[in-house]
Image (cartoon, rainbow, N blue to C red; front, side, top):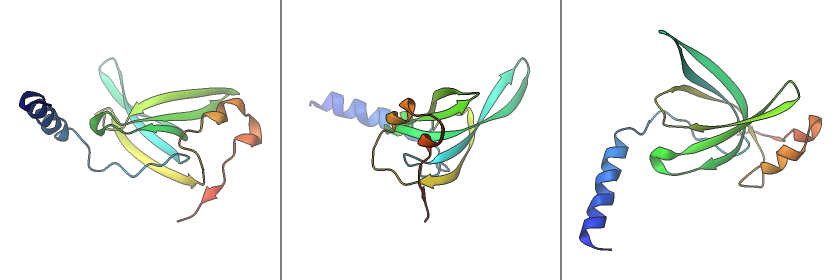
Length: 122
């Protein structure tokens, strides 16, 4: 790599470091978490909570994302959240689960009690 691209990458890193949140808890795959998202409805703002199991995580500094899965009225719902987004107000870890995979996509094909994960105690 030449000097220009190395300097360019360093500049981007410095800009991104200003926006990285320091109060984010350590999230592992299999954790059940509760996320508070700031929702804007007209001129009002409120916090809406979403709870589910972390089935995947993509680590990329400022662009770190987690994929949350929950079942609502018998239908599986997955949503991807940017951890360092200014819209995310709170992240609470409810429970840790013992898993042996980096991605829990196999939970998509299961329903009912088959989706339960063993709890891990620290």
